[in-house]
Image (cartoon, rainbow, N blue to C red; front, side, top):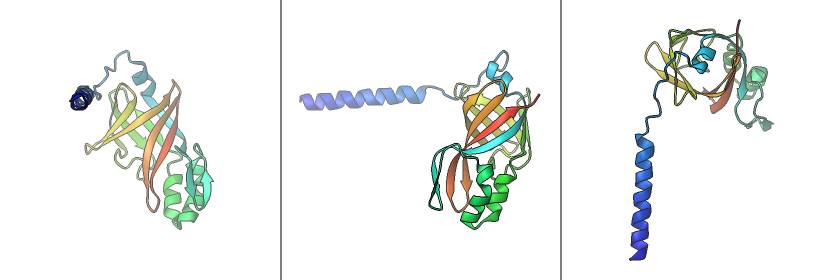
Length: 179
């Protein structure tokens, strides 16, 4: 009898905890007025790099976390036998991201590989307690990205990029705010 009571109480506690977690609204929108992160994000940003988010193996070589995908692009293209992949990575190196204070965004440059759901324009907002920058394309496709780090002049976003022939790769998009 004690075992059944213990199992029942454990299960009931687990279900209560699960119900509490599920009922918490995590995607509440934060008011933009007087919000430091919104003020930091609003403006024009220049891409500084696109880096591996984790250590990876490529062609028998160990590539450490933080390695520049821009620098690796020719090697990746060669290892995969796909110069198109190398070009798609290199094409992003001069991207410029503009996040307007009216919650619209525009990206000048290549987004096909790294931000296919966001496209080149749409709306932006902060979600999940200001930890996620959510881009929404003009077609309504949501493209959320975890903010790894943010200061008044730097923004590091987490991306999961699908690289044909390889799979999904966790990457970090490093941006620098322009004057």
